[in-house]
Image 1: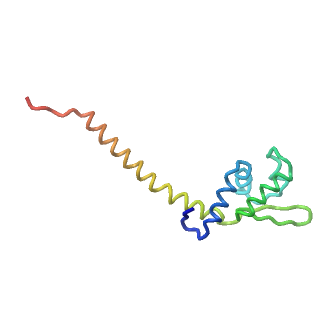
Image 2 (image 1 turned 180 degrees about the vertical axis):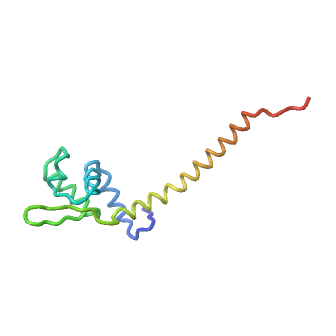
Image 3 (image 1 turned 90 degrees about the vertical axis):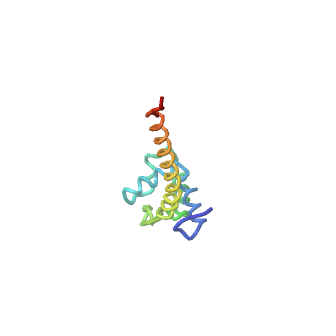
Length: 123
């Protein structure tokens, strides 16, 4: 896979793979508000605690989340900057597509203008 601003294409693949699951995206969204215990992360999800731990392991392996155990509580945190590489890659892909759409819109607008203003034919 080609990538932009990230030296490791395998890491980029791992991040996209990790974020391909809705439950993992929900965990990331929750962690964007701040660190949380595994129990707190599991509450809104309709799954067992072991299933949540498996999802967290995928996110940790992708380098998106880190966790630390203090006593009996495991607290998870987003890794600062973990989504910069994937975001940069997506932005890099989006710009050329937007430019093509802008050119198409301009072309269609020009075509509509020509159709709307009838040319005057000479008698």
